[in-house]
Image (cartoon, rainbow, N blue to C red):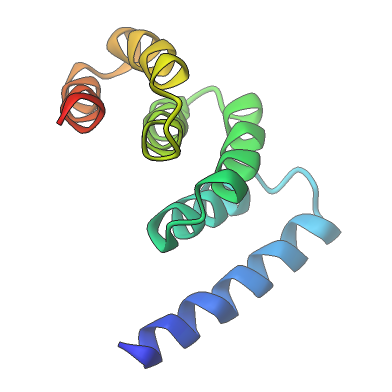
Length: 104
């Protein structure tokens, strides 16, 4: 388990450098937000996921889903519900998963 955490830490540093040198690297923002969310760092995850959300047009549902989860787990259910409502228009399956996470 410690080895996996070391890889995540390395990935976080790599991705932070990637967006520092290429601020338009939207995939890096999304992946960085996802890793930070999985690590339980919801506030920092939201920062990167919001940037991905702003940049994406075609993969926006993934960013919206992860933002909803991050807000839900950080205690902001109202904002999580706002993202759930948006996600219903983009991907009903992901919206259902988000709904379960918010209310369970």
